[in-house]
Image 1 (spheres, rainbow, N blue to C red):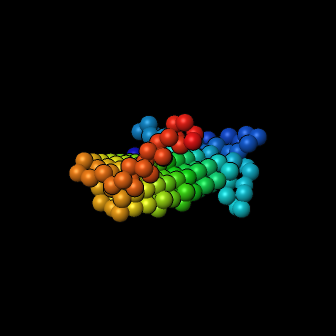
Image 2 (cartoon, rainbow, N blue to C red):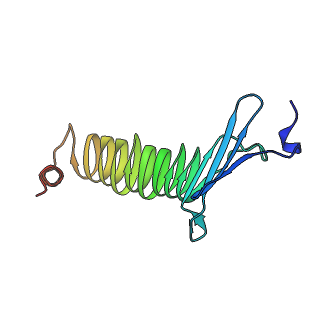
Image 3 (cartoon, helix red, strand yellow):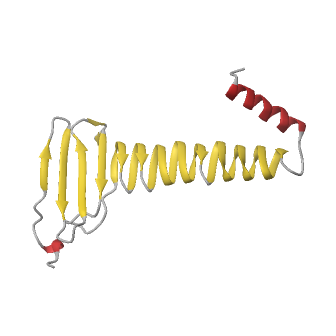
Length: 175
């Protein structure tokens, strides 16, 4: 098989009203696709989608856009295996506001490992309010917890019980 990095790549390009698709099918059946919307905001496309390995560089392209979707993605709303953005969803999700993933961080974080400045919910969590199997924070609800006010198997600080009961009522009833 020839080295594609040394040859001119013939992409199948499709221009639509909303954006441009760039696709390539490798001789071995691997597939590369990229979509970039025509509309931009502050120089970023509203939507950028990537899949596969770019035949020109031999590497994956990071999706960058207001909405970014790809194996690695960076944007306002980023979705990918590794996602970085205001709202990030992925295995590794580093979000400014919300990180949702296997390992997530942000002001609010939800994941197996969750590190949230304000709120963290996860098997292992850390944040001002932390809920998890193992949690570290100021208000903590956990099987094993470390913090100022902890409600766990070993202890039930009255402040923590009151706080989490109030939080539960607010979430379920709206009080």
